[in-house]
Amino acid sequence: MFRGVVAVALLGLPAVNPSQPPTITVNEHVRHQEIDGFGISQAFRRNELLKALPESQQREVLDLWFDREKGAGLSILRLGIGSSKAGSPYDQMVSIQPEDPGGPGATPKYEWDGDDNSQVWVAKAAQAYGVKRFFADAWSAPGYMKDNGDDKGGGTLKPEWQQAYANYLVAYTKFYAKEGIKITDLGFTNEPDWTATYASMRFTSEQAAQFAKVLGPVAKGVHVVCCDSFGWNQAKAYTAAIEADPEARRWVKTHTGHTYASPVDGPLPTTRRTWMSEWNPNGSTWNESWDDGSGYDGFAIAQAVHDALTLGNVSGYVYWLGGSRGATRALLQLDDVAKTYHVSKRLWALAAYSRFIRPGAVRLDAAAADPALKVSAFRNPDGSRVVEVLNTGTAPATWQGVRGRATAYVTDGANSLTPSPVTGRTVTLQPRALTTIVIR
Image 1: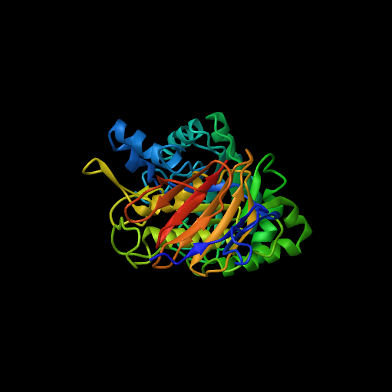
Image 2: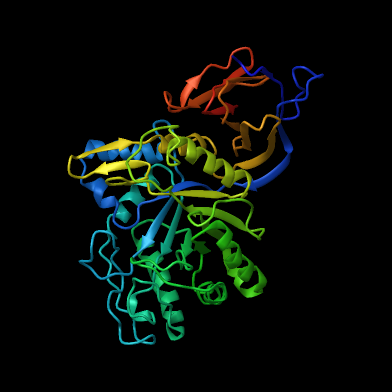
């Protein structure tokens, strides 16, 4: 049975039944964060899995990531800045300066192959689809710049190498510029509060603020990003340290955090842009389901994106990863042995937001009287409005009073952004489904 008629006040319009308080309200006069976009990373040589597929399937995968008609229309690509030597294992990235040039004051000896583990290839493809935000992020400085002598296993940046490391990062952006790709956002640390067996490097919040003051002056024309902490609550300390230092605050334009150690439960303590810059859920199998209760199905991703946008006021959401192999929780499974790929509902959960909420959109105030309906709303630069409704309940609902040329798209177990009719200015909100309503 239907839960009942859902009255709505949309963009200042009156409810269908004035005596009944509106269940969904969208107030265009109350505006929140501006949206930079939604994206993926393909760092740690995952692009080589894509290149192993037949060309026709390569194009299909790229369409699923970046095309606004066939796929998610993603608008941010996160690149991994390598720190290892050439010939390293599959899960490492090749450095542009693998050998110590002779000390922090010596002339750098950079190596550039124009490929960067196939990241250049995917970046050029993304750019052809219209992607303009390229976020380059370093997991570690080269080992010789660190106190543990290794790019892996944590360790910290030696103080005397700070300027050389900053110059190294800027050199990376210049190599991409020569390939026709403008790096718009540059990060110098990834999970500085986590020691990993792979490329990793520790920074305290104070050390990160200090290094931002070294990188900022030489990273001209690029947004400095910090600090990609392991958890969202942990990221707050890094943001607070940068905000407390006027010179560091001058240079850091975007504050970032991951959500492995803690989920998004509120905004970071800054008025600058914030991004949820990396996450995928725990899981031990490849899972294509929408709503199976596993915690790594499509429904879980839809909830996480909703919370990041509405609780965290994030301007960007970057998923880890676009595609990988085996029992991955990436959006796609890339099988370089069988030469094929598989699509999970996680892709379509993210696509329901990324395809329609475009860079430059502004989040509008939205609320639902029924707690089962998780609602967010946006106004795009072209004037179109997007209302996202995640029905977490087990019964359908109806939304009456939609005005304008509206199209609804349903994502659930049987649908992947399937157009749904808006008849009589009414939209049906299916149970356990994400409904995207675009009003032009």
